[in-house]
Length: 436
Image (cartoon, rainbow, N blue to C red):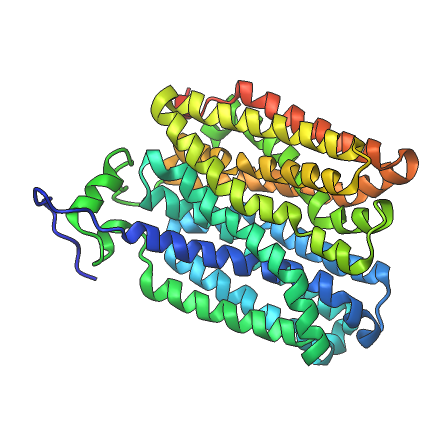
């Protein structure tokens, strides 16, 4: 593509191509979480159809998390090395194909070798491998396409697709299963992913100066505070990552966010049905509350952190949102667990999820602030922490509930959120990496 004009024209308005790039990232985010969550709904018909037990299905779920956690850092590194356009397009194609193959896992050649269960575990693992590249390459794209004052909003909108994706998954997958069979959601999601990957690969570029839809005025807006592009790939500063205390604290804080997030993803619906006494239909309806709150508060938090960076500087703008959001999340979870009236409890618990994700823009933008040329790799390290927390949470949450009751189990999650918020007092992304 021909580059835009290099000299701004007085009085001419900047183009808005970066917002179209962001809209595509949001679409990819939505399909990411649809593909992640569809199997949990389809499992009700899959298990008898494939002869699987609940324990075996749990192993299938865990296979995704394993692949997703192991390939966060490689996925981010590839985006830094080869650009987010190719890496993200390839990743979406990869996991979309394996999503569609989920429907025929029992008839593939892998089933002859590994059995139906082994074939399904392998496919879910490979979906996780592909999806691991998504969020770090969102971060890589935002680092390249957005100025400092818009980075939080960019990541808040991108990851805010989580709320829409998870809110849509339960009713949509259930309707498709009833009308067209349990295989249909996997075919539909795979086809949608391939379409979105094609749109991204056709429209996006790695950097704004490569895009013919970007004029010189928009390029000046984007590049006002961005690091100049490297003339050749730079090695990842692993030693500087290890020496920088902020990275340790932000990874630990995001590990706490991952723990609390997976309480909602894994157990909120069953908590409403088993503990709060909702029937299956109403429980599935109200279980969308946290994800709707995320859809609103995740982008809003990104916008707020950008505004505060303008007023307070990078350290103050990021840490104030990170700290306040996680403390409010913990307070809402404690209140929601204690309130007897079920609808008020759902409201507070939903706000707990919303305030948790209110911090996401600050987290991810901070990795760009720390290392703009290696933001994919660094955010992959941070998100690995979230998946460590997400691995512990689905097992520890029900154990605490069985041993001590749901109030204690949710109270523990609230404590994790509060601790994660307090760690923000030590996080200073504006100071950059410690090189010596």
